[in-house]
Length: 128
Image (cartoon, rainbow, N blue to C red; front, side, top):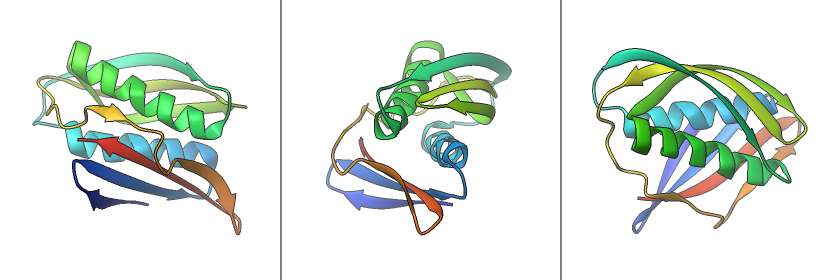
């Protein structure tokens, strides 16, 4: 599950799943909703993203998705994720086209990625 919380020139993204990988997958789904601009040519990418800790990994993951959209026009729609510590390996499937340039940056403001009562929760603020 994911949900957006509006801010002035920012969009807070709250993520929830039963696993760490699920939080990253929900972040991908949310980004795809923001960036998708109709279907383009199907495409795939392999990515490896690492950080010092899980909150940093959430930021690095979303930064990678923004980078792929901005530089290659690639917007992922699904992924097979493998998480080891604070490194994620992913096989992304999506489309190449002209994504909406809505997300300018991923911020550290109110950043969170942790388990609470057996549920993994993440929160990140996007500069839009």
